[in-house]
Length: 305
Image (tube, rainbow, N blue to C red; front, side, top):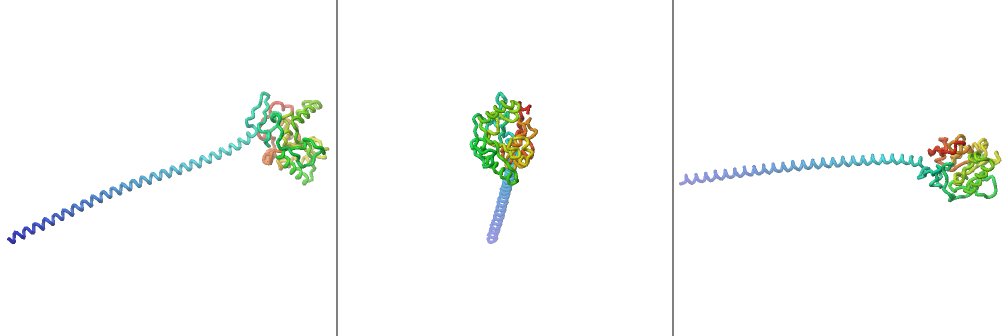
């Protein structure tokens, strides 16, 4: 009886141990399976993370590429802008200005200080400068006449020019500034009647084609030539000083020697025209006419000049 009982106890212990071993094996398998799943999940997360980083790198590269493209575009636009400014300067006197059937251009902006008036380019009918004043300089006559006037934008610089001449010991006198259309018409017709058409066209503009009507011009002279407007003025101390220093005050010798085929008028060393300091400096240094500077070719009617 004791032997049977002992055998039963032994069998129960063996069965219990076997069950425990099976349970441990099952738990180990579950742990391994869980670890495998966790490793797989971690690998998937790492792959996704790597993909996200690659996407971010791609977006960054695109952004940098876009920024560079934008910068290049801005540089190109800046270069185009500079070229356009140069082109605008060259075409400053050709804004919507088309010649009529006679080849005459009517200026679209008669108040511009860089305008070009000549035999082919005229002021609008009825034009009168809006800001005429009398500059505080010495004149060759005492009574009041309209030719004592200039536009205000040119009158101030003329006063400075006269002061500069005086400081250099030069005696300058103003002779003739603004002329109305009617006054120019009288002068031109008188020159035609008394000196002939050829002479008139060399030294006198037709009404509407005169720089004097712009209010930007002044004829000057000196006692050395009896205040006359003659080529001999250039040989005087005043004429020499004016030729060398007028541009410093924004003026040019409008009709230089040897350029009649371009300007349409014979040499006038006494005729100064205000264009502003920057433009005057460029024209003086390049030794060109206003027409040449702006690329305006002379038309018919200047062959005899």
